[in-house]
Length: 484
Image (cartoon, rainbow, N blue to C red; front, side, top):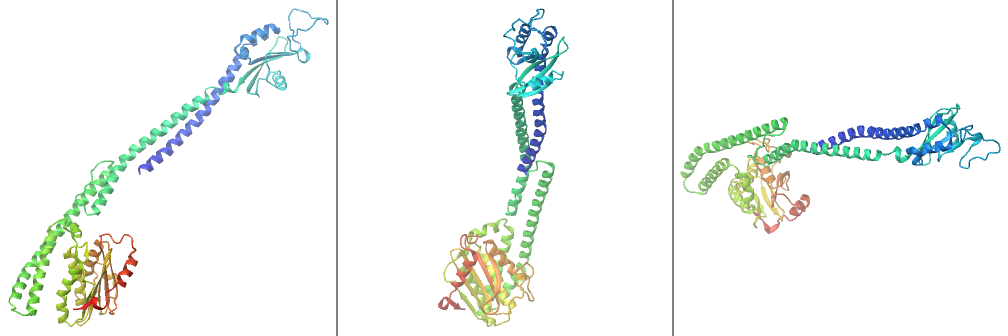
């Protein structure tokens, strides 16, 4: 916006300067020309009284020399034939002409240096003033009536420098004034644009910070009226978002807290089951559920904890082994064959342990809820320097619409599906810069591929497809895979 205002101001000012400076420059040039020729006419008029009195050469030479143009050698007088060189003296045939006289045809003579062509002089003798171009300038031909009724012609030479005297200086002054106007308008537009742009930039930075999760950012309400209104609306929106998030956290904490009562009853009932593998598994499941509820309450109450969790990280293989130990007991009761591979080494990922546990439980829970009893499933882990790939596959009927299953609220299908399980998995993967894909597994059912970037931003140099092919090619086989 700032540069746009500067460009508009520059274009408008340049057009205005050109619209006024060009005609004014031409007017200055014409004024200088008129001034030069007016001065030449004034110089020619100084000889008229002498020509009206006499045509004596000596007297005319003195009159020409006394003028400014004649003294500079810029004036000439063309006397027509029939004039007398020395009035009052009768020259007979035996008289010798004065050698100083320059006589033309029929006794005409010229005084001073003439630059005009003879035909132009003859044209002026008919009583019409004329300006003709000569070498180095112009010649003003001014006819003057003599007592004899003929016309003498006074020629005044006007050089080019006299015609253009002061024009270049005037043009330079006009150019300097125009350039000053352009620079001043650009500077003014830049200051005005800065006054408009700064509030807009602050608003844009605040919007970006709010999008990054910095809920405390606010905008100073200044600048033009429109931007002040936008700043007020932004601050109001930010306050509303903070209030809505606070209400949501309180609601989640309250809902989680309400589970404590049935959990307490369930824990007491589990304690009364006595001894045995089933009773121990039930008590362990109740204890795990109680820990998860406590974690939900703490996460809902502590503002900003979610932004810090990814930096903590956890060992993905250790979490997967722990959760598979939990789910293998239920799989054994339902007669499911379980295969686990690739979890023998420690692989850290930038995901908090509770979030990774929730994602694994969501995927494994879908297997138990949406496939018949006795359906086999497998969990494979592949990792490289850049990423970790977790594959959860089963031999069930599959998911009819994988794209819809990844959208929040649609679910994997079947009764009892809330549509939130795969959304939890997707958010965990995307928090590291990864993603989630659903396809057909080698067992014949569904395969959920969870891509977790180990550096939290995805692979930097290796393309993602190449990394996937490399991870899949390194799938554990033989002794590396174990059946639970």
